[in-house]
Length: 125
Image 1 (cartoon, rainbow, N blue to C red):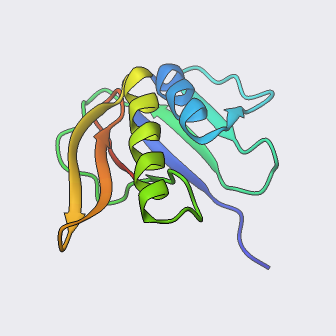
Image 2 (image 1 turned 90 degrees about the vertical axis):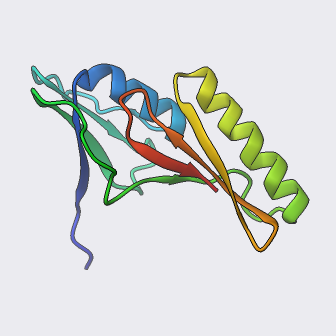
């Protein structure tokens, strides 16, 4: 049996960052979780890992060693996948993410690199 686990982000504003990621991933705030200086989001279907956000005094200072890839349009052909990725990136930018760059491989569209509202890198792929 697999071990249950939680991905944890350091954050300046845990509740705000949790809200961004809940919207981005289709998660919800964890029912009953009300800790000062922390927030937690969960998959409403109970399948994916929980994500917690803990207040820390220092800001982000270096590139992430781990990041989340948000899927655009799984299963689409290449043109459909690219449209889905670009549309999803635009939605996340409207929620406070920042577009860093588009990445291509051998001339073909690959993914979009973004920053969440606290500067954590993630990709829309």
